[in-house]
Length: 187
Image 1 (cartoon, rainbow, N blue to C red):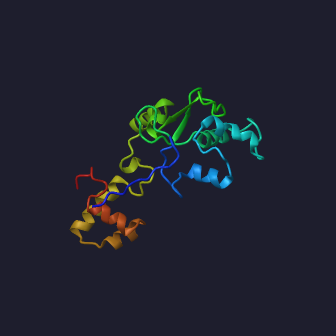
Image 2 (cartoon, rainbow, N blue to C red; image 1 turned 120 degrees about the vertical axis):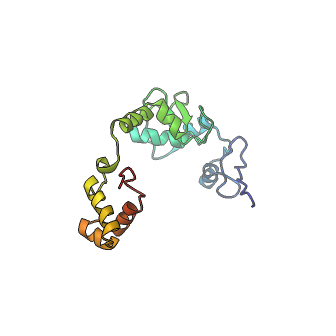
Image 3 (tube, rainbow, N blue to C red; image 1 turned 45 degrees about the vertical axis):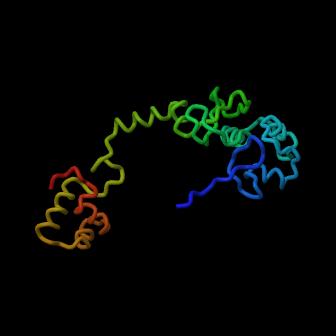
């Protein structure tokens, strides 16, 4: 088997995957825009904001502050686990403050751990068992599943007919009788 070789940007210190002409997306875009400085210099990149005709200053919404952080600070490695960083964490919690000392590049799981979202998700999962009738997308009750399995095994009723009786799809009936779902019911 031949392994696919991932080529990296030719600009020194960049390390991103290439998109076109041996350059990553950011550097290729800079060449097309006619920006002369090709080194991945964050300060130079941040100073470009005043030269942009659409620049409206620092008066932005929270969402735009997050978007700016993603644009200004390229994809790096996670500062905690060294996986590819997809998120930009604002250390002070203010998404409008895009100062380089306030931005931390993190992967998604580390970002959720740092700002507490991971703990909240774990608590929600512990509190609400999402099985059987308690699952928000459950279409059948516990008793209906028992009835479907009994009738399919004892009366030899077709899955299609059982599906029509209960107002569900034949594939759902198949998953029930083959014990792919509702596994905790003994019958």
